[in-house]
Amino acid sequence: LASLLNDPSLLETRAYIGGQWVDGDNGTFDVTNPARGDVVAQVADLSRDQVADAIAKAEKAQKDWAKWTGKERAAVMRKWFDLMMENQHDLGLILTAEQGKPLAEAKGEIGYGASFIEFFGEEAKRVYGEMIPGHQRDKRIMVMKQPIGVAASITPWNFPNAMITRKAGPALAAGCAFVARPAKETPLSAIVLGVLAERAGIPAGVFNVVTSSSASAVGKEFCENPAVRKLTFTGSTEVGRILLKQAADQVMKCSMELGGNAPFIVFDDADLDAAVEGAIMCKFRNNGQTCVCANRLYVQAGVYDAFAEKLKARVEKMKVGDGLEEGTDLGPLINHDAIDKVQEHIADAKAKGAKVILGGEAHEMSGNFFGPTIVTGATKDMAFSTEETFGPLAPLFKFEDEDEVIELANDTIFGLASYFYAKDLSRVYKVAEALEYGIVGVNTGIISTEVAPFGGVKQSGLGREGSHHGIEDYLEMKYVCLAV
Ligand code: ADP
Image (cartoon, rainbow, N blue to C red):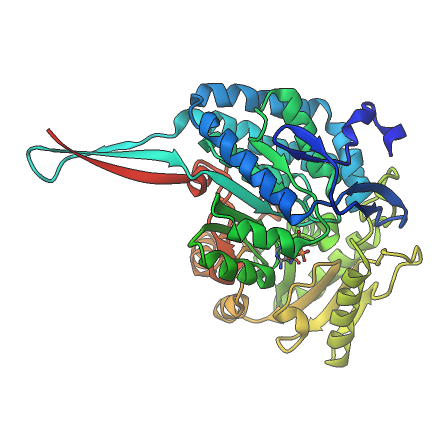
């Protein structure tokens, strides 16, 4: 991998604590390339004591960082953003090597991830307080916004860069220090953020990366260490619940971006070609491994067969392969468990009467590759109705009318992203209002941007990331009552 990079020094394998590069007390763990199965790097495996040390260094650094003006913080964050963009190609290569997604998508993620650093750096200048008219003649009421303190993050492997920057951006802008624990599958993309933070002049201890093969040990330290005042997590609802319980002992502030089970609805009046393109983007991006991927596709009876045909014709053309090869549309899945899950969902659907019209089997490239699959005749009793597949499986459900599909779409514990295609304006309003989701894409399959508030309702999470609202998750309000 190093030989492919313009700047091989970006391939760092040590952890970054208090501005120092450190080896792991527990040795190293392997990072493997999901496309080829080879070991890409051996990364520092930190002990719980080393994680505690990172928190202590962050706590110390945060005191001074909080004193910097918004403009000063913005300047170094801008530099950090610029370095990410200057090294976009190398960062993309590192990401593809450990995560598998096609290089073009990986570079797209670097641009997307970097945008949070740019956006929130700018927001650092706009953390406004408030003056409230006093409740008595001699009273003045002031509301100030202050950084929470040390924020710790736990992030997944599906977006190894952006899931960290969308948390670190607002945290640093607010004046918090940050300790990032990346997924063990994809630590290199996190470590390189540390390399660039150092080069950008982010002060030692303000941004730390703790790599460890034991997620639960790090999770416990984050929740039990009193210096951590904020936990920010992206991952499954299952692990989110564990962390919320652990964090309760310290009454720690938590932001949670958890699982989804996104409905994608195509109404009779939709532009079918646009709906097919939208479905491709939001079902097959990152090979179906995103929490906002369409999991259930509901198609109105009048256009059901036509949509299925068009989608099939389009998906058939997608090329499965190594993400580093030119022209690859779909990379490998992250590991074999991911393939098992897709296969279980297909077997379950077939047993309950669904028909596989495309794919359905492990790809001829074997390993972690799986052919994109479309299933018709999907029904409510099938596993993918209630569980996220997190893979390249598109189940098509048939529905008759608006009320029925709204009920079906909302019939889940999740509430992250949803999508629908329709032209009738009153239908657009009615359905957008009725969907119990934090995000609704109307006539589009792509909803992620740093300028909008991303987050879920119900068991999909707590808090919002992105937009001017996103920084609030890292700020405390203090009310000062002054008698004059
Ligand atoms: P995914 O399916 O995206 O891997 P997980 O919720 O399993 O979702 O994992 C998300 C992140 O949470 C990963 O970095 C994983 O290592 C970490 N994790 C898993 N279990 C725990 C735990 N008990 N405590 C803290 N972190 C955990």
